[in-house]
Length: 132
Image 1 (cartoon, one colour):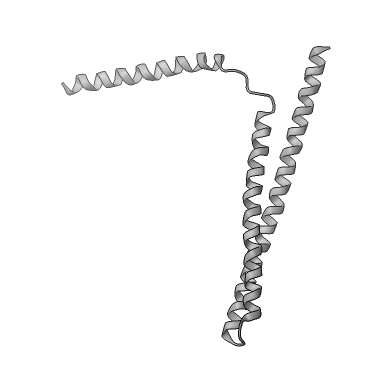
Image 2: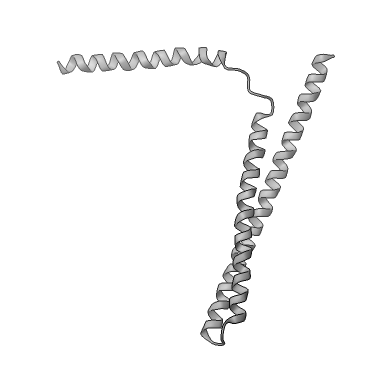
């Protein structure tokens, strides 16, 4: 009995695999063509979202530096002031790293927008030549 179950399972697996292989090309033919420049637009959207997140992090880092500066100003001399200065230095370092990340993300966004504009310009020239 276990042998017949194995054969039945094997036959079912083969049928599913062959059915999937045959159905996939048919579905690919029926799929509508993607919108021109859709990939570039998706990358621009993704870059804009990432820039928003980095900008929010940068704002939090700026607030952290401001808070650390106040703490240093209010700290008494000695260990408390030294600890406050170390915290300020760490906050400034984090802010500077985030600032560099923000600048890089701005450049990524600019490049993505440039690629999108190029694609859209190519689409316009293609459509204009097709109509002529």
